Image 1: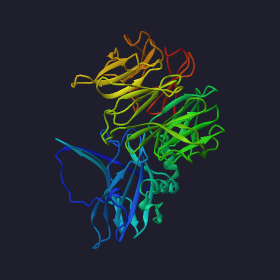
Image 2: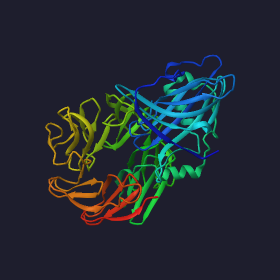
Image 3: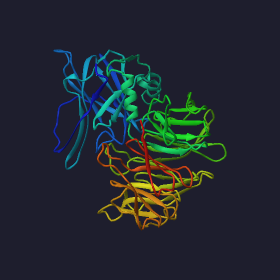
Image 4: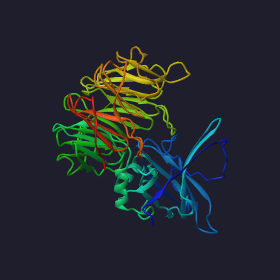
Length: 500
């Protein structure tokens, strides 16, 4: 069996078509009916979404392949409980044999927006047994460097983590015997490592005491940039994708992600241990140091963002809980954005459909502020200036900025056609355009190109993530694994190497 399956994307803007399908959903079922079993599959998205429009597919379509007995079509719905970067497709089915036909999303209004990944007639097959839950494991959906997308199976099925999830969110299913069908997607470890290498996104760059820079990506690995020609790949053993990274020392780091997973290393990534006992349930979105020796955990759970203070192995207390609305559609901010200022003394939280706030990490005081309008981008500069691409007039997005913590907003010097810039201080900032990197030394009034991107190669480099190691050295990575370095405060740049 093939080790991975190409995802053939199809997007249609058209009137909605109807199809008679049975839609078993686990959320509406407390127990399995006579003659039924259940099936579950996890999907981790190795990027911002499964298509230009959707963060996840909203169902998996399967067809019974028992000729003359069960040839019906079923749509298995998704659950995002306990997750921010993953979805679990989970539903009850009559016992029998099935083949996966496609993964799809659809949202209809005046028009319908659809996106799907089709397998055709040779899609993976599985068996549902009466009274048992068939678990197919965890897939990664990833864009590879040669313009292809693929679904790649993780070599190890995360049964223990999945059963904890069942016990928390669907206790009626937790006692069902689990059937692990490890061959459904051909679990090739080499293909999985390749998918990890090409998982889009280098995020959360932090400077370690020894001067190296640690990044995490949308998979379960870290990259430590040690020098101009030396990059170390570190496997953490996390089942979900990494969404939070917190160094506590030169070799003491914590990573966490969906399904309240958290792991810690004391030896610079050589060995890892689980630290989630007594950890609040949900998807970890961010980890920061709090006052005294406490940690602050931002946890997404069932449409709310909860903030906890405490320590691993001890008690956690809830500081705040804010409800917000999420959509499977990409575009706009439909999920919380959490961003600190440079010294981590303040954390800015932008909530969709709710007042945003600034949190003082030393006192836990919270100051709410209103954005100027509907938002598509938000960023906080190193000097604490808040910027957004917001629609204040109801007609178009424009760049706005606030220099007083959100109390007042002014038109920004930043063009509404560019990504939001990163400012190191009130004057010096960087922005990325399709042609390269631009630098300003007057607060954004004028910009000078300091690095030209090579647009002849694929993939075209995207916006950069800037990490300031010291006054002169800046390490920048983009979403396509390119690493560039400046030794003169960003006046000139050198492409060091492509990250693996």
